[in-house]
Image (cartoon, rainbow, N blue to C red):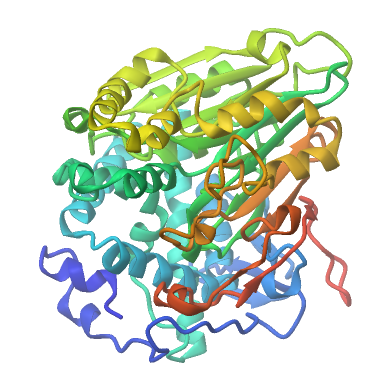
Length: 576
């Protein structure tokens, strides 16, 4: 399969030689699922020599800049890989994050290759997207960001951004060293541009539309069911924040939605010792993917006692793509900055408002557990909500709404100015004019009538403890639920693969949950794979679904929730 580097030859971003690397002969969509190592957990350290050379060593080595561990998904009941990294304060911030990235790139290299292969195939084959101009845009943004860092040395925001980009550089270098050490076509060399594609794949949807508005979706040519299915599957994720009726617990749940080719997940735990005076969170735990340094699985737990979840917002007004700006900070970078530097929901919102590129637009929910006290009234600031689209970021304290029970999130903007700017009213009006066959799409885009809005309105009070939260976030009773009306997508954890009219391997493919008591320990429970709620059949890569690239996946997804903890496991024969 051609790599993204080949696309960049034409625009002069990489040499032709990078396009000529041999690729792995694995068949078009072969499922290969070897463990990264025969060992249950692999341990490693990253050292910096006096000559300034970086190196990876197995085990936990004295004097290292970073040390950590990786447990591959084949060894876990949840099918989530588990990565831990710890850095040490006797090194500068930029070296700490570079070493953490190097460690991650080396230990998770095989899964990075899998995820890159699957994601690149999805964009270029399944979506038939042209990436030359979008990748140029990302190169321009990267150049601008480095210029701002150089021009603003000593400013905490830009110093953190510098360290963050060093983490990215370290991940690239760590992977490349692992590839050289492996010396095998099973772990081909990937270039920096390949990693830029992977880490920015969420941004790319909007950048593609910026260059060619309407290129991905020909709405006028779609019939009712196809348009409804397309709108529903654009929405990446379901989120829920809810409180017990006696306020003795506060619950947070999230479920990712996307193509099932994305189901290569790693739960990542970072423990830094940064010197930046504005850093509020030295530790971060999150659901993520190989080659990404943020929670594309959209849940963050910070040592600052903030917890953040998010769901994607789509744009239906092509005119606002003009507000997308490469001279700004892309969403994943702003989220990492806010997660490190913010000490409250309001501070988080202020950081997210600055330097908005208008790409990878989301609704963010920020829960401040510094303020929440079990069994006490919720103080202002407990829940902040942020909606982002090109040219606009709206945010407000929504604690008063939470006092009435819950806050749901299902890919529809809450704030009216965002809802209108993103083009929802006009798009809905055009669908209504086309007739009743489009009613499902119309309802899906309604903040009040969307299927998940109705289900949460009815069922959020069923969350009374941690086990019921886990159940609600995997809920799908489409055969019996009057809200779903027989549609397997119209639920909290929708499954398009079960759609009899037009089955697609896409929809909800995981669950992540935490509550006050778990969050205070930076713990969550997670499970990877489409829901089997109420006896639904486990998803299998078989039949026509095999045309979708799913390298490194299990053949059958039938896994269980598993507790994730920030504490690094100990080496059996060596004290950690």
